[in-house]
Image (cartoon, rainbow, N blue to C red):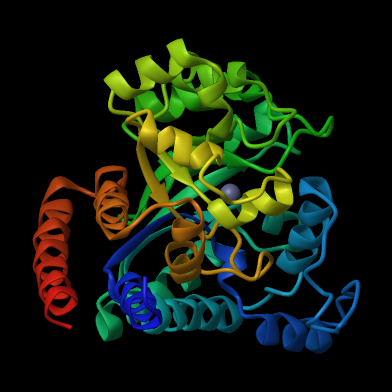
Length: 352
Ligand SMILES: [Zn+2]
């Protein structure tokens, strides 16, 4: 392939319309804003050198940095500004059209920010960005596994008692105090959410130490609507077949697996094997600022390293609509918009 062909494919992948389903709100903050706010509020960072600020040994090491970063978001103005700026950056750099955010009220409550104190300014910022930039969004309230199963039930009760139109689901992330996923520990919270019509997702099967059984528990015991990560599923072919037949969606995050799972991105990567097995897979950045990535980088760099091309990229972009938690009318409008944009891009690629 000639250099100019590579450039064309790179432009195609940049301009391809994208969703992002697996995006932790705190991580949409830019590195510059994180350092600025840490200085303003006297929050200690491991270093203020942007070159080494985001170096970690593993998932647990990263989570320490992530929890510290929640410390710098203190006021409504900070939250709304980070929300708006994050959309603007990704819409410009990678043709982002729709995003779902994981927001963890349990990180913020001990610092005096209640549920509405946290959610209202974030939603204000995202609504302003949607009006200005045309990027739709929904919110998934995430259970923090550091906390107890009883606290998880209380969190779901709070979401149900104080409905917000854009808050459509429940997820879970972080690790238990024993550094495990243990999804079954939170089954009461998931049952409550499901009974009241909330969508559900869960981080499971992410690292080499996280057994495929964790994915099975999320799929079959918690009965989630989608899975975050889920890479270990390919080590259980029967479970993979059941997930494929059920149309289960996996919100994967290629770049973060190089840090949290220690994997190389190549054609043998588990995400590539999930796609080859016929699973519905989308690409997201997970924790963009911490992993020095973006949804654009996942498509432009990780996708070609897995040996995938533009046809795969289109399928992955459209699968992100299938896996989204928004209503059917919103999905239909997105599918029509994506189809038109993809047709224009295909024509440009063929003509150039
Ligand atoms: Zn995540």
